[in-house]
Amino acid sequence: MTEISAERVSGPVDDDGASPVWDARTKALRYVDVSRGDILTFHAQTGLAERQHVRGGAVALRPRRGGWALVTQHNVVALDAGLRPEGLSVPLVEGWGPVTDAQWGPDGLLHVATSASGAATGAVHRHRSDGGWDTLAEGLADPRGLSFDPARSRMYVTDTPATVLVADLDDAGRCGALRPWVSLTAHGTPRGTAIDSDGGVWVAVHGASVVLRYTVDGALDRVVHVTGSQVTGCAFGGIDLGDLYITTSPVDDGRAGKPVGSLFRARPGLFGAPVTGPLPVL
Image (tube, rainbow, N blue to C red):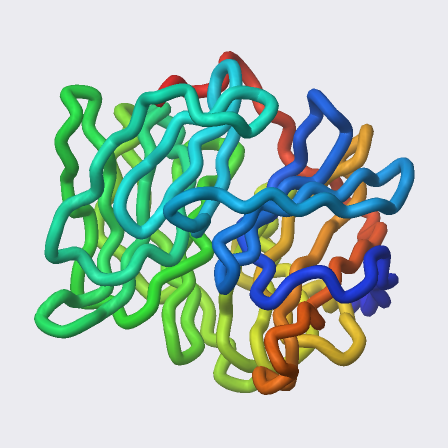
């Protein structure tokens, strides 16, 4: 077992940081502050963080060809490379639970996770090329951490209270039934995930101040320790994709609305899976 300590690289900048993604175009980390509905940009070279409020709020931010796809609770909005709206949006389906995460699938289609609320169970949905939506999995509680392995053969998703689920993908990118993969009962609640170039799955654990790395076979082999914060997400970045960036939310939710979540970074000795081929188009 390899244990690694992450360093704090920002001051208190967010209430609920999540959905981190490396922007190779600007050499910066982009992520969202879900509680405030903002997009944050951390410039690795200067250590400065910028905040941009987005009308309609921000739940997840994903790169697309020519810019970004911003996922809100109501729609998916096309942004240009400078995070400005381009006028294109895709509505989500009325009756879904709250959106918790989003990720591009290997088929180039956007997958969205929603949590249970009222009559709606937690679910994973996929945006079809004709503009509609398919529901791929239901009966979940609070799914997050959508990710796909470099071999394009697996989809991972976390769920409360303490499970990472996996589904096999066919050649067209369609997923089979979700099944339990690893249990985090001894650690905490899994949130966001990241995949390295070896197919290892890094799981941000809320309530334990760690990020755990599991091999393709589901064996725990690395632990990244984060001091004093609840861990919400992780993503590989840096010029060589060898930096693991970690987002957090405050331990104390009653800090008078002041941002107290910080950004952390570690060098775990493994590297993120590079993007191959053109980025998806919304």
